Image (cartoon, rainbow, N blue to C red; front, side):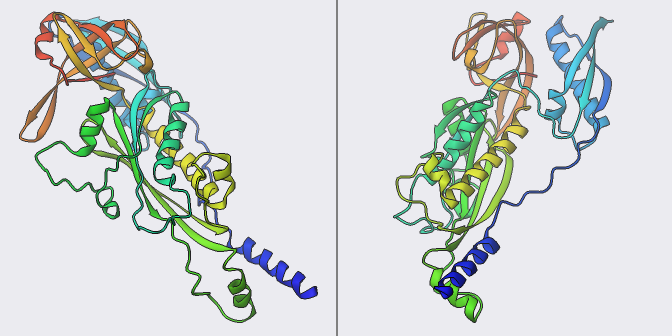
Length: 385
């Protein structure tokens, strides 16, 4: 009986020693907010005041960015900036803005951005056994999408059975066998009208081999007896976000952890369920899902909203965004003509679209200058600024 108690104590010590958690750095002390007041200007061409106002605002954002330094992105500055005064003199639009910046600040975006979630394939086959849940590949991006949508800043589409990477070990590189066509990222985004594409790979989910036990002596014997009940499993998940218009990689991060204990996830357990979270491996994966979703939300909430032109009829311009994207009647958006030159795209600013009618999935507006409508076609880009 005494020997059994000693073994139990030793087992407990081993478990405490081996438990791993996601490594995170301590939260930095928040610095005092920094305030900047700058002025932006833009010439009014052909009476296009709305366009000049947008250009003056962009000029002001660039000036704030130059003063604030590299620690603040243009997107973070955008969400922390307010227009305090505006006027017109000598056919020049002047706009004064106040930017109050602080570390870790997240802006409240006026529009929801569309994002597509694709599957997270495993880099090494066989690391998830047939007796374990197979929901991890699609469940991780699905739960990330749910968290992003709950923020109110994103609209999600689940394409979690679509895999972007024919070679997951090479991710985020996408092997394009048809180089003269748009990348698979752009194709998927265009099909769904999405601004961003979420993807990733399960870089590691290996259970430590039970054939080899580290160490020697009494402790190794105890570990050898317990290896069928207490195992160690590595966990590494890479998360990527691509731009839906160009296919450019905008976000890349690896999240890692080590799991000790009963590391297997029974078949039938779905990612996000209470049963899944109650397992050591499911808990670690859920922690990574939460952390990665927060990182993506923090970065892309402040990004300028963008969508595309659906069609042009007479003086009306139809765009692929509506009430579900939080557009409202009276909003004004900038229109860019997308031009292709030898497999490259260039965007030429055309003018400002004034929204007059908003439906659930689309909106209708008129250009500030009616002559500009002749330069617009279906597929052209529409942005908030």
